Length: 275
Image 1 (cartoon, rainbow, N blue to C red):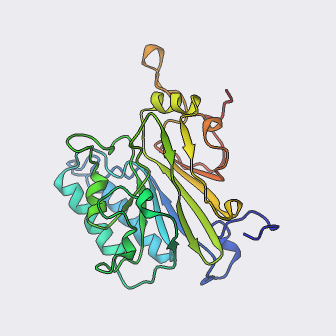
Image 2: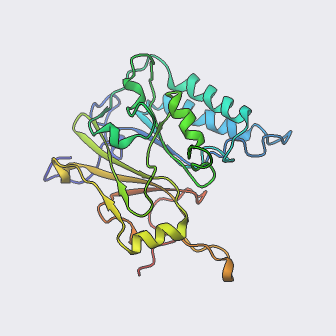
């Protein structure tokens, strides 16, 4: 946005611009797909896969520039082969194609991505990506086991998903933005995949979470954080689980996309308590 103008990023102002506006960044946001949930149920077994495909049909119908997934793409930490295949089929059917990608990643991609290749998928000349997908992990599909891999690592290696927001050092979490430009619109996309709530709560209280900011035109970037944590206390007695207060999050964030809660709410809500 202009230095002296209203702080309305292009992707939020899409209804204010005509189709084809080169500065409007259109993002389809989804979370908690839980692919494979009740997949053996004769009635509900296809629900998660059908919903997942509907998301990408809609994204292409609306000419979205990218899709942002806020965690729990899979219901199980070790998804079934069927769930993995169905996910890859949907991504291949709808994210590969002839539509031109109009966004540009201008940040250091070696700091943004975790796989061997460390680059955004649509820049690979061996693939014809028309709809980039950016995803963090949730508590159901977090990294685990030998090699500390997540199911999203498979999707990333297959060049179907841009997996980001993984904190390798829990004792000192540093958030690096994926800097995305489309025309004059500048988006700093931050992500933090699920960390045990109690541990992240302590890290935030102890100021052990830091945020890297763009070195140039810092105030011209719109800051978006994708997060997958509890927004309010759960359980009772000794079984209570921790949660993250909105007041604990970095104050520079303009929007927080909060996965995990399975509610579609716009604006502040639970977890806003100070302290």
